[in-house]
Image 1 (cartoon, one colour):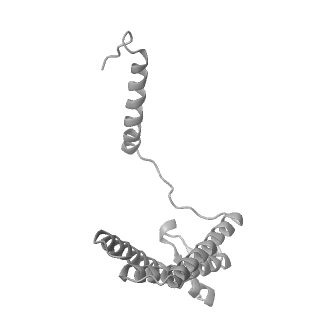
Image 2 (tube, rainbow, N blue to C red):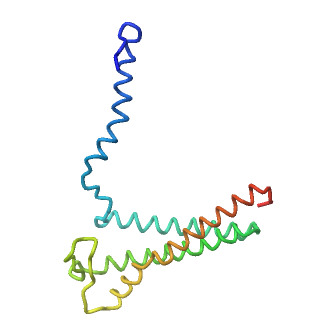
Image 3 (cartoon, rainbow, N blue to C red):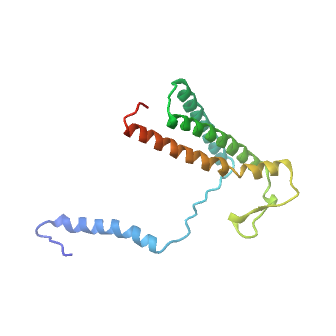
Length: 166
């Protein structure tokens, strides 16, 4: 690539910038470092804001569910969207309780023998430890809820393609 300084003096600079923008992400992907994608909550502000987000999301889901019931929308997609709202409301409550149970536990209640991502709960088991354990199984609600959301949106899309009344 040659730069034509006499024809277009700014073109050389522009080509260099475009090449840098294209090549830089590629170079970053070739030489990865630790991503640190897992975020823990620092006391006390982060957990308070996170819990507030659960409350606001729960409120938004309650309103969406109420509005879907109020407008008497019919069809498979709309019913599945209501089921999604109920499951996500349950997930929000479960996650909220799980975060509270985490606050009530001590760091000595866990063993990180094989690293942070493989922690094990140590005995003796109390009620708060059992609550914490069962609230960590929130994916048993979350994954089906997201699957139902997908099926709902697919059904709504297909019914709109066919020209049916939503």
